[in-house]
Each structure stands twice: as C-alpha cells, then as structure tokens.
Amino acid sequence: MFGRSRDTRQDRQQDQAATPDAPPHAGTSEAPRLAPKSPHEAIKPEMASPPPPRRLSRPRGGLLSTLSGLFSMLAVVALIALVGLVVLARQANQPGPLQADTVVAIPQGTGMSGIARILERERVITQPLLFQLYAVLNREQANLKAGEFAFRANVSIADAIDTLTEGRAVLHQVTIPEGLTSLQIVERLRRDEVLTGEIETIPPEGSLMPDTYKFERGTTRAQVVEIMSRAQERALAEIWARRAEGLPLETPDELVILASIVEKETGRADERPRVAGVFINRLRQGMRLQSDPTIVYGLVGGRGTLGRGILRTEIREPTPYNTYVIDGLPPTPIANPGRAAMEAVANPSRTNDLFFVADGTGGHAFSETYDEHRRAVSRWREIEASRGSGETDMVDPEDIPDEAPQSGALPGGALPGGALPGGAAPGSLPSGGVPGATPNAAALVPVRGTIDASEGTPLDPLANTTFDLTNTQVVPDLPAFGEDGAVTSSAAPASGVPLPPPRPSL
Image (cartoon, rainbow, N blue to C red; front, side, top):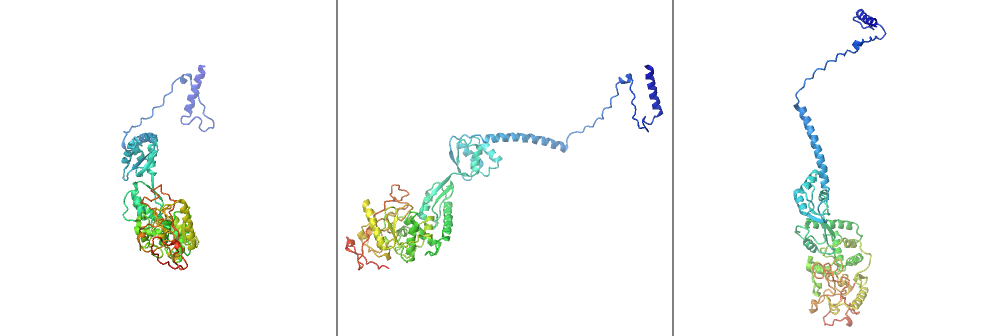
C-alpha cells in the first residue's frame, strides 16, 4: 500500500517535470486526468480566497440627496392628504342637523364665509369651516349663488353646496290677468313684496303680455316688465304673420288695439273669434264700434274703471277713445290683451253678425240684423224678469231713446253687466241706447248694466269673491219705431223727456 502511494507521487512529479510549460493534455485530444488526492491532502483545509477590496465611502449630500428626501416627504404628505380627503368627504356627506325642510335666503353679494354663517345660523350646517373647505376643494366657492333656496331635512354639506351652486332657487310667481291696463299691471307689480326696484315709467298700453311669470327673490320689477314686453313682441310677430287675408287692419298695432277691445268685451274663449268678427264686420261697413270699454278708458285712462255706471252725458263726451263719437279704432289699445284675443282678431269668425247681447247663460246672442237683435234683447229682458233682477246700475228704458242701426244698435253696448271673467266689458250700455240723447236731469242716472269689473274697486271680481259673475244686469226693452220714424206710444218716455229724431238707417 505504501509502495503504491509512492509510485503515484513519483509519476506526478515526472509528468510535471517533462512538460513544465504546457498542460498535460496539450497537443492531444484526450481530457486531462485528475490525480486523486492523498488522504492527508484531502483532509487538509484549502486556502480561503482573499476578501474583496474595500470600497471607498463618499459623504452623502448634494442635489441628489435633497431630491430623494423631498420625494420621500411628498409621498408621506400625499398619503396623509389622501386619508384626510377620504375623511373629509365622509364627513361632508353625513346627514346634517336640519330637523325639517326650510327655506333660506342668501342676499346678493354674500361671500362664501357669509353663506356658511347664514347656513349655520339657520341650523342647516354645524361646521362652517368644513363647508368652506369642501367648497374650495371642489372648486365651487365661486359658483355659490344668491337667492332663496329650499333645503330638505337632514341635508348634508355636500348636498347643500350642490343646491347653492346649481341654482335651484325657490321660484315665486305673479299672475297678470288679461285685460288690465299697463298702469294696473305696474301697480300689481309694486304690491309684490318679493320683487325689488322701481318702475320709472309706465309701459305703453298693449305692450305687455298677460301671463303667469315665475321669478327668484331679488328680481327687479323692471326685469319682469322687460320679460313681459319681449313676450308680447314675440307673440304679436307670430300672430301677425299668420293673420287672415283681407282684414281691415293695416299694422300690428291696429290688431292689438282691436284685440284690447275684444278682451274687454268678453271673457269667454269660445266667443272671442265671433265678437272679433262682429267688430271686423262693422269696420268693413264703416260703422262705429260703439264699445263701452272705450268710453271708460277715454274718461279714466289707465285707471281702467269708473267705479260706477256710465252716465248718459258720458256717452257723447268727446274723447279720442270714445268709439260712440269717433270712427274706426281708438289711437292706442285700451288694455293689454292676451294671446287668445289677438289670435281671435287675426283670424275672426267668418260671420255676417253685426250685434250681440247677453243670452242669460254667460254668453251672448249674435244677430245679423237690427230686428233680430231687438228680439234677442227682448228675450234677455224676459230672462231678467224671471230672475227678479233689481234696479241697480240701470236707467229706466223710457229714459233711453233709441235710434237706427247706423248709429249703432250696440255690439258691445248690448252686453249688460260687463263683469265677465277676464276683465270683460266694464261699463256696458243697453242695446239700443242712444248716443247723443238730449242732456237733462235723467242724464245723471247711470246707464243700465254698467258694472266695471276692473281692478282697484269693490266690484273687482279678482278681489271680491262674492261677486256673481254669471248674474248679468237688466237690459231694457228696445222702443219700436213707426213707419214715420217716430217712437210708438208703447215706448214713449213717461218722464216727458223729448226724444231726438231717429237717424235714417242704411
């Protein structure tokens, strides 16, 4: 055993000496042979590899170190901010302290902090700082609006901000009925406590559209007037563009003038086109309109009402508006007509009617001839007698001389008790009344059926709910004429008042 080990060492030494510079397998294709280690060498520990050289440490600092620290700080801040935003959003969406629905007014020019204080005072919120912070983070501080806002019970801060920024303000409204004058409309707007500001000048008659208008608190009265004026301009342009052909009206202004008369004569929508047709027919034939509302407007102007009946002396009182005196249309409208009245004048009923009188049902009986009209008046007298109508606002029929149709068996004048819905026919003259009767003591007696259902008087149907709008006044019988044109004895005046000679008919 020992000899074998020695031979092995000798062979290895000889091989190394024979080829000191070349590897044992150089020039050959055989793999080198690995000599086994002796047991002594095998158990001998091998030398450990030397440690790597130490790297020189450089001092920390400079721009790179600063940026690294800054990014680390920003990351921490961002994490804290994210957590804070989550908590803030959760708090802002929590139900608020408001116990019941309420309305809060935010004055014009109030800033975000002022709004927060108002909401805190009204118990809508309890954390005004949170309100402001949430509004700023959502970039809504510049969008908070003034006005009157309705907040529901337990509204959250987030919902309160949405209400203020989206402009869901409480809307008030004012209703302007058809047939009011511009002065009456202005007075109605002045009485509205929600509106602000003053109206410097009264708008032109007929320039305002009657309707219901909604507005926010703080809206000025001048703004409402401007809205009404623009609405009237648009409506008139549309209606004039689709008017019927051949109307005796040359301008849109004339359409408004006649529509204002129709508006005052009847408040029934189904009758407006036919009433308009009566006036259109009279204009075409050169007949005077003889509408009682024009007498009233000529006497009182924009006040719109006499507050009493029309006197006999006032029938022939010359004013630019009295259509018993003037030919054709008045110079301006006598009220502000609604769209329906203007539509009726633009497209009146195709009829030959020249007269109308109340029929006892709230409507009118229309007639083409004067004789038909007289019979319709007689029927109305019978209806009145059966109802037991009193003698209020009337004149004895024997004190009212009659005349031929040319001077106008009255279209609108035959409307007794003009108190109709919508401001119809203030001051109606009984059919067959005579314009131009000789003044006398009886002239101080009001003409029958002259109820002025206009704003501002105890007879205003809008203010007096006990006023019976369907119970019209008494209409006198029309006197009959003989063949010579004289009044028959059955219609002769008992008071001895002389009658003027009747005008010849056409």
